[in-house]
Image (cartoon, rainbow, N blue to C red; front, top):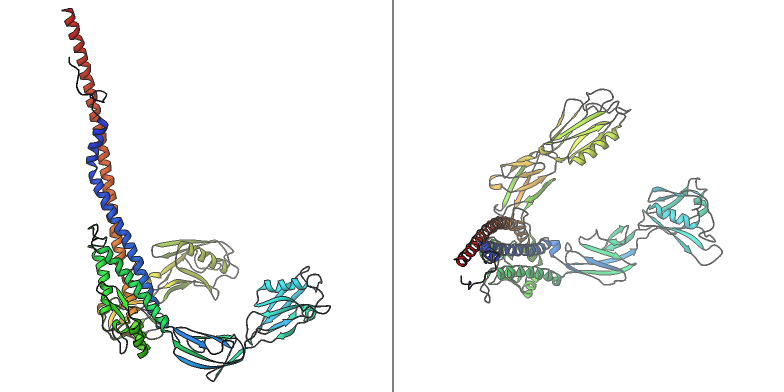
Length: 632
């Protein structure tokens, strides 16, 4: 039999079965590579969305910082004599000047003891030193072994009563060491006096304090108006202006609008906007080098956000008096969506009317009056105008109390209270002998641990319970396992139900829905949300008007960045779902490929076994034929 011309490496067949199996499984796994590539693309897109959110948050932060006139405006404040006073101004100030005369500075009272030969050896006596500060007496205990001048100083300071004690060495005479006690606060009201537990003949007499600096108020004239203040920092006379008094004398204070600081704030906003838009543009366009589209190419969510932002720059209805467009103050929208800021145009508009410029940016056109009313949200779709708001029922907290006074001697037996709020229930075990304070503490601890918003209290000796929040959602009940009777809490075996009320009323003449203290409109006033904290029915007016640019932009960006339901988070959630689906498909294909590999291993093993048997038969027949030929 002629020798084979082909050499095989297999045990029987000579086939490289491992390579064949790997190649066949590799073909089966080709879809996995495609899925992994798609996963990488979606992961990259997710990263870009997170970067987009960061840039939107930065832009919103700039808008939010400038939507209030007090934050938008900046003023320079100059004192003609900085040795007499320093001055600073905030955005709530206005351009003006003041003639300031400082007549006296505020001072903290200081009292000094008689002199002593040393501060750490001589014992001055134990007892209680009584220090009266601003009319309030404080007791300072001086113990044995701590009654040196040093020990008394430490006892006073450790008491933290609003004074500071120090030891002063006058440096002359046989008794140079004195204890000086100084009020921590300036002002004429912060006087200091001393007594002791011996009626003034004990420690107070030994120390024998004398006044070295009387308490005094600052006295200052501002444009002829004389004011007295307890401190040398006067910040409540002129809105937005702080005077720091340094010495007696006169000074002229001048406040001017700091246009440089205002323009810097505007420029920072412009830069943040342009950075955002440039980022979006780069992630949308097709690369000239790689011919690859950016991650945001085809992303409707991104285009929608970009278009809504850019639309705000073309509006011509901003409430700026003689100004109504951003171009009039130097802000120009370029063809690529970025912004430029012409400071000279801004200067011209500000010099004409800084109030108009401020209004253009910061006016909040939506407002609500009336005690207890506050406005939370007005949709942009609601037309400008005045709308009536009527509250027909104020919100209340659910509350109830025991039907009898708590026993003065405490509970006569163990008792269990069960509280139910919605689907939540908690049991509180009380013990015989518990006082009303004990019961209040045990109930509040248990309710806090269970997350139930109800608080127990002592109301004139009666165990009482009040919901922490307003409205029907906080309604609850409490019941005891013990009937009402002497020695019990008085809650009783019949449940005490406590119901809270939601605010009710109308907005714009249309019925509104209440949840606690919050009232939400319906119909044309859907999404209008306000809060009423009053306790009786009331009426007021909701005014809706155009918002300034930064107010409107802050609202727009806030909507874009809403957690969970906003477009950014919604798209991120969708991407997470897609990535998770791809991972599931990859896992499934991996499992099927592994099953296919195991099948091939079995089939090739069977082939090797069969070929081995055939080869054994071939060898037997060859031997038989050879023997037969020899014997013939």
